[in-house]
Length: 376
Image (cartoon, rainbow, N blue to C red; front, side, top):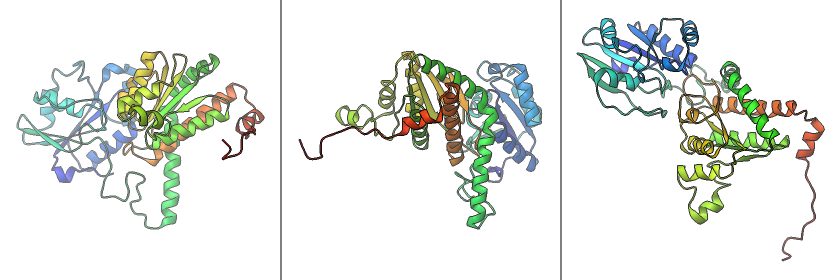
């Protein structure tokens, strides 16, 4: 994967890593690009206040390099940060600040320059390269994704070097499988916690409400359908609007993110679980629905590629996929989330002792007498 060092004229790089959600495959791609371009660099591990020393040591081991621990929020290890960086990067240096979104790239620049910059935990706050003067040097803020728009359809698969449909087919399916396999480690702990939470909900007679937007809406609807096949009530409420249209038509309740979030949560009670599906973790009505659900007393689960986001912040349990290092908009993330959802449903069914015959009965058509069409 190539980054845009040439276009911005970078002579050095700072790689920001989110210690709470390091996304090692992506961070490694950034690091390899820096090393390939022979740039002097420093790796900063931000948000050290959210992890323990063992987790930080594991981060260093997996990245294979020294990482400077710090926290821009709590100001841990930041007293001499400016002086340390100036020793690495001489005057006139053009320093590219790299990393995925929510690693603290803009926060670092604000800390060093004293500027009041727009900072949030929302993915996509910085959408273009921005230059900032700092001590006779230039800090270059960057976008937190690795999609190269000059490559063939990078938002789905990297088909670079492939010009035959049969090769594209094989490559795409392998990438889908790799996305699932790479999610095993990151998703396992959250999966087991979600399993326990859902089992308690079902045992107490509660139901599940699941929501998402776009491709994640399709994932949510598929998971809901599978739950129904095992005898569990799961209500999908998404921005497809099929559920909200009657109310929206009359009252306009679902025309905005906040209104749709309230409509989602109107389906939930304190005994229920609300699941939010969002690859980025920044879909407005989805994370707002989880926030409102918690206020209502319901438990919440996030199924996402990025846990240090508004969605993750409003979830009791986070199931994190690791399907696409280049960025969240991907068929691979959708496939991984579908697989995780199917596994969740089937594991719960097995834990409940559901037999195949019982499951089939939930899917059989039920014939009920009704009037002939046209007869009032």
